[in-house]
Image 1 (cartoon, rainbow, N blue to C red):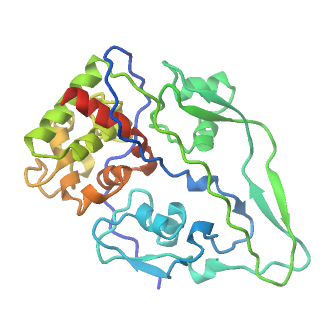
Image 2 (cartoon, rainbow, N blue to C red; image 1 turned 60 degrees about the vertical axis):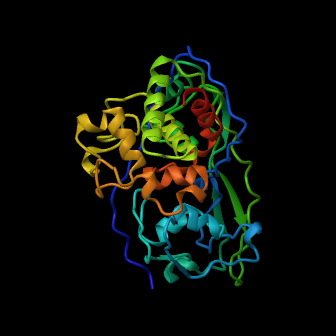
Length: 350
């Protein structure tokens, strides 16, 4: 039975493309960053509908038809547990990237019966589409924006965003490599038609992305980081929790107290007044925004929003997954690469 879409409450989303200037050097801690997971949309797409391939590392653990959500679960965590693409699991359950799931919800781990397979006509071979190849790549430098890079290469902004799995509010930073889509035609792959069910071999896992390039905080960024550390210390938050908050603020706002963002997102953590995080002035108060991110018994939003301390088992979760449990971002893999530097900022400031 296909479950009803879970109740949706938009969390904190979107990032803004800003690059900080260099003025305050901070030492890095020895902790190593947990690499993220590649965008599932880069996988080979078949014109015929076939069951999603199970990665070879999960070959002995076939996903059940559904799973009951437990405390602390996210769609991305459930998908990873069974070697499935997060986008597929969302689609099979009628959810989107901003959907909230709750303990007890049933999440389908296989496509609906009508989508599981289709007959392949004997008269013509099935065709699989392969996304257009990138003609080149571009390393981001200080002062770059997504718009300027697109214009420099004579391509549309939408094409640049799609080639890199980004959105208009995404942050780019010096040292990051962006794929520049070329004009190469879309390649096609012929699959031999037969009366047997179509099958596709599992693709080899792509290389994990490297940790975020080193960033030297300027005076404004360092001051905002100190506020996050101060609020965390005053509430008895562990070093791990404070490091998660620092990494989250870097991803969401480049550690700047922004007065805009995606839709009505504002401030250090790009919290949204329309989803209960406070008034415009409140979410731009860095002390209050930090307190709301941490949450817990002293959460200024009460039970209206869920902070890090309200996430069951957050301390044992993957670094990036813990941040995502609060932010509910469309790009959950962007927090983990900042783990090492976040601990370094904490050591220098707090």
